[in-house]
Length: 382
Image (cartoon, rainbow, N blue to C red):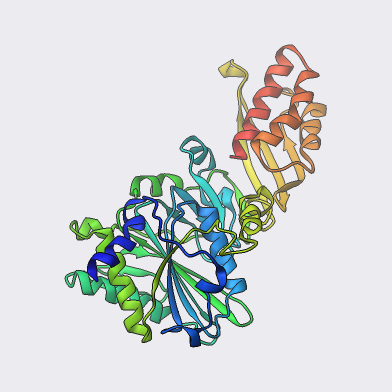
């Protein structure tokens, strides 16, 4: 029995593909009276953050969670995931993420920003709204850890995080409640890249003023830093066993691929929305940028500071005012620069294309100074 369990966990533990899969949605999500247990454990075969988030949305929207509880286990290649009501420019270093090919995703639940990689386990507990109980879900994780490593001191906080030794955060939490259903998802740091986590979760745009939900920084640790011998397979097996024990279930474990339309009809459309700029950036709550731009034209003595005041709504520039010293750049050019950006995405690539024509209209020293101003603006946009 132990051999079969470990074989099923091999994908999450080592990232390899497997032939074991289910071929129809009706077979996978048959009504509990036809099954031995009203619970189900699903393990995603994908490490794509958009596919896994889309699978969450599909389960929440298509499975009768009044009659069946589900635990979804998944992990992603490097990605930063922001909460539904957050500002990506205020939460993460977008240029650094592009350089390192780290994906950015906005989930549908609230809460703060998290870093995912293959050393982080994600757990999503799906239930009816009536059965929603975050503390009990966290107890599944903490008791599973006690099962495999009794020496670990793991406790839940009032914010529904998990702390190790009363100090280090090893699990963050977020949730979404619908009219009849709910899901609660958690991270669990097993062996994540903490240097990437700390370097990427920092603002890319200075001077943001917004009502968006801010993240609350905390000291973090990996489980393997305090229990070096803890293997993926051992951790996953303990979580599934404790889930069944806590809720009195006999939940079978199934490997599924979230891009399988035969299992999850319409999931591809959900994934496409999560990948879109309109969702990831366009859903950002309205914000204002107030900051100084340091300008140079190659001569140290000719440098100056400019004031930027910009309003952004739905990810688009709604207003832009630039106060540049008139003896450094004519007022007509600073005004034209702001006007060109109106209605454009708050995005360096799109903004650069919009400013290109204005740059071509000038020459000599004015063009050089205007280019310097445009580059400073683009840097603010991440």
